[in-house]
Image 1 (cartoon, rainbow, N blue to C red):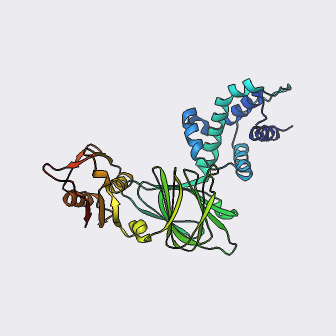
Image 2 (image 1 turned 45 degrees about the vertical axis):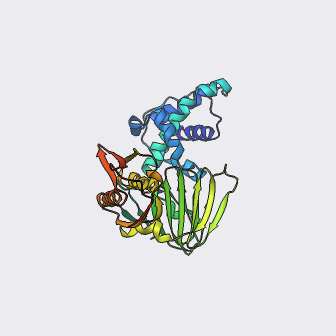
Image 3 (image 1 turned 30 degrees about the vertical axis):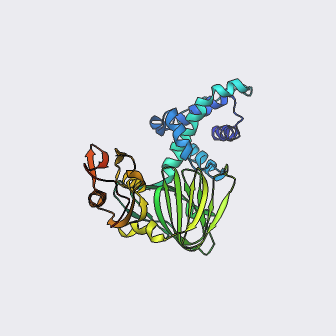
Length: 338
């Protein structure tokens, strides 16, 4: 049997979970001889990456294998003796090796065959996708997609943070799917919508068209349909759908931040997500105050000044932390319209 045929057989057994200990070690030895193996992540990093790693379908598994076999290798001595399948205890002992192998797969395939776009704190960026669709990334966000995604039946992207999508409809009716870190996905053909995947909740706001929002598999209610002018919010409490003023959630595209009876906890949460500040409320009750107003998205200093003046707050910056408290001799305010 030729070397590449043998390695292919090992790889297929690994995907099926049927590798013996010796076969697993041989496969790892083979892959570790690639020049990229020097930069492999450690086991803890691999475990963290696996949580965000896109599903390994058959096509992508084949692509990983093809890449491995096409890589120039050093001579490998192949085993000539038969090996026995691993028992349960032996399989458990090989978990570390499996994680390393998955880390290799991640490095060799996803790191090389995936495009990633990101924004820094305070930065907004517009990205044109291969099919002509556009994504505007809000601050502190990232978007990933496979190089060959436009040739597949489904156009898939992976979002971290917040993005506004303008998806073009294709002649082939190709589906467009946005995946989030928490397992929620948004499926469309052609439409305009905003996805905000921050902290412990996800918000999907639909401006035009129609979208299907699918919850993670472990959630009882699996999917919802959204119509223009509606928002779906997903959190530990489940999925909640309602009609909203979409401009309040997408005004950041026009360099504006709009608030309407918004708790200061959410206002400062936006400041944390978009500009990188940590926030500490030193007086109880400040987080529940509500604010209505508008501010330039690229001027967080002005927003802090507005909040300070409107609510008579003392906002002090210490390193990267905003310490928020009432000014002396100030009675707590209830609600401010600015």
